[in-house]
Image (cartoon, rainbow, N blue to C red; front, side):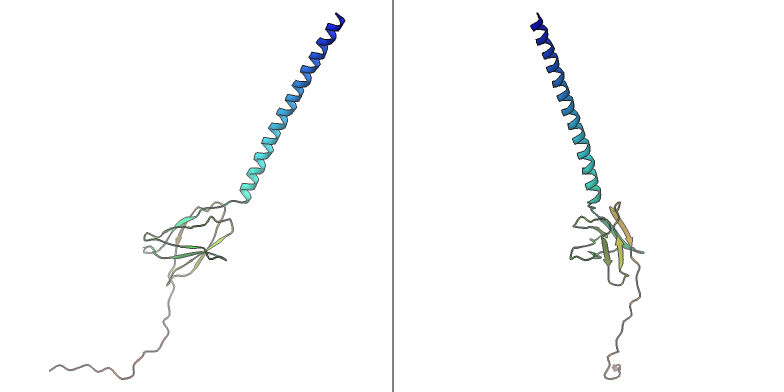
Length: 145
């Protein structure tokens, strides 16, 4: 009978140690998942990529053919017939887009973390035409009889 009691006590200790092992394993898994998701959120917030689209217009309406370029690269876009564009590359915060169109002032727009849509109105600039009038002989009207 003494032997029987000893076996029962060993089984009780065995079950308790298994329960402790499962509890420790469960806590380890919960901690791993918690800290893993926190680090994933931190990484995505620092490497945010922004897809930018927008519309460019002047005081009369949308502008077709406005050049949009990413500063320091050769990536760009052009507005379509209703003045809208979708930039072909995902941008990062602090990137600068340069908007240029003949007869209008060039504008630079700095991308922020919350920039998804750009609604830009360009201002026309005065264009000076420099040159000399080309006339070798004076103008004479023809007389009709």
